[in-house]
Amino acid sequence: MKNFFPPLTTLETLPTPCYLYDTALLEETLQAAQREAAQYHYEIHYAVKANFNHRILQQIAACGLGADCVSGGEMQAVLQAGFPAEKIVYAGVGKADEEIALALEKNIFCFNVESLAELKVIDELAGKRKKVAPVALRINPDIIVNTHRHIITGVKENKFGINLDLLDAVLKTLPELKNVAFKGLHFHIGSQITDMENFHSLCLRVNEIQERLSGMGLLPEHLNLGGGLGINYYAPEEERIAGFSAFFQLFATHLKRYGGQHIHFELGRSLVGQCGTLLTKVLYVKEGSVKKFAIADAGMTELIRPALYEAYHKIENISSGGAVEKYDVVGPVCESTDSFGKDVPLNKVSRNDLLLICSAGAYGESMSSHYNCRQLREPYFYGK
Ligand SMILES: *Cc1c(COP(=O)(O)O)cnc(C)c1O
Image 1 (cartoon, rainbow, N blue to C red):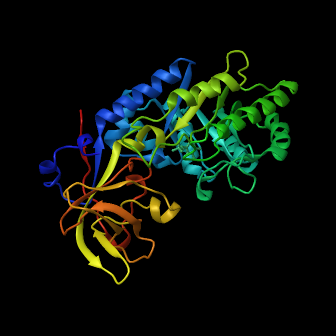
Image 2 (image 1 turned 180 degrees about the vertical axis):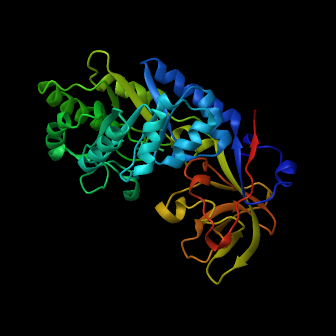
Image 3 (image 1 turned 30 degrees about the horizontal axis):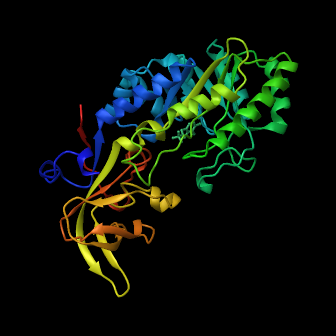
């Protein structure tokens, strides 16, 4: 991995723990995604929750993508970074009144609505402002995907979206709500999905639903298929850019598009995951009675994915060329789950060695916290 990073002498001057962002790789990734999507006139909205660092947002906005927001705060952040309001979609099961008001005031592209209760509130708030809110119904397609159970979103038991068996009732109510305009259908089946069969199942389900709606004379102007395309955490050096080509091609092949329907996607992880790395310094090497621990100055407060979803991140020791040994790489936080990996093979580790925790650009910095009064350092940008 070393040759993807600035020289060790540069990294040694950085206060740790800090995120490193490769803006050249980000640019290459964004261009690849845009190029592949453009072949089919698909539109991409960047799922802001993956990483809302201002410079990253600015770069993504400059590349012409839209934004997928899940809160008023995210809408403010993307507007400040230069995303046009007419490219913002706003999703989330718990939209607060003031957040809905902000979206109405800014005239965003679309609300992705998750329940009848929410639809009624949006109708009421839009009516008060003499506006008509564009809405897409988020449908829970009841598709089980092969990913960690904590990041599946599209099965009946999840809190997300409108269940298929309740869809007819919502559609019947729609004409009574004069201040919302039905524009689209929205789906999102989960995250870190690498098995394209899962997206194939989604296409088939969407086709079924569209057929039903077309029988009712209710074809939406747009479909939003969400995000979820996974990245290679195991060998990031071999797959720097996610498989956008196969992903979009699959939808082009299997998704039935009626007339001039617009097709939207919301990609997060696949756009920013590989461009970010967590740089951390080893504070101590602790020899336990059965294990060796490399105790790093970064912890779950900087990167919570291993603790939260048992996620794997590749780790490298860039300061050492010593013989490979196995270490549990742990952080300083007072929680047993504050660990980045067990029995991680690393070149012999000594105090002050620098470790790279790879593929941390998505759900890394954006999920960091101040637990234990910890303070993340400023990120370091390189590459462009
Ligand atoms: C999180 C999320 C996304 C992005 O998911 P990725 O796996 O990062 O691509 C897209 N749409 C919705 C509704 C989401 O909640």
